[in-house]
Length: 287
Image (cartoon, rainbow, N blue to C red; front, side, top):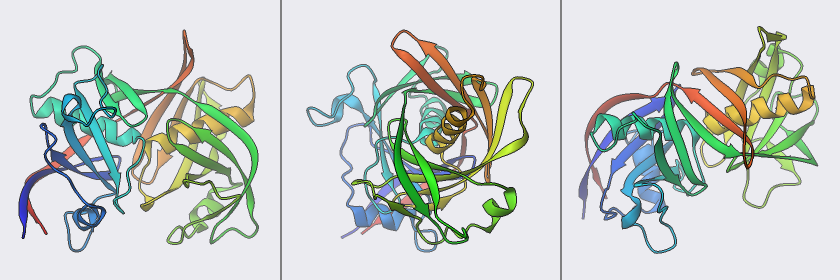
């Protein structure tokens, strides 16, 4: 038996998603159905799915009462993820274009990592990813194309990341991320892994600049990862020390994103800015 569902394809700097409107919370997808939707040869294609559901329609305990809309983000393999930085911007773009919300005032979106607040920015949309944490526990990263294993630093921005510094753009370009890099010790729930190279100079006009590639857990290498971009900037800022700037630009294969660190009453927040694009809409039959 098949069911036809509406969808919209969207992306943020090439990090692409199948957006599924489900305001009343009636669409229950299996992992296999998500994987079929995101398959680039046999499905719509994408790095994940964004189910657009009213928070009030979620099961008890899953709702975010301070946000009308909840972003149910699933990786391409069907696994549920806490958050997606690029996804929040694409989600906000969809809500605005569909007439479901406005962004004249800050727009609140529910996620598994809590409520995220979005505003307009020069790059498109900016999302406050909230508090972050640096974990300096020893972790070693092995990846195809690296001559020796490299140390990494753990960064939590609502979902887990391990960031690795490389010495040159040649090293970054030589990485083969068709295979998943290996972490030792391996996190219980996995992590996104970012490889970064600083610009030369690292800081210009008070803004830091880095280049990055990423392997996303449950997906593989993607053209961009919003929370990974934030994690990469935070890691380089951590390594650079107290004099490091609070504003960064991060170049990924899909484009450029901005990162800001601001002080709020509850601590330091990291903000991510960048574009969001809706590509096309249609219907698809799900087995």
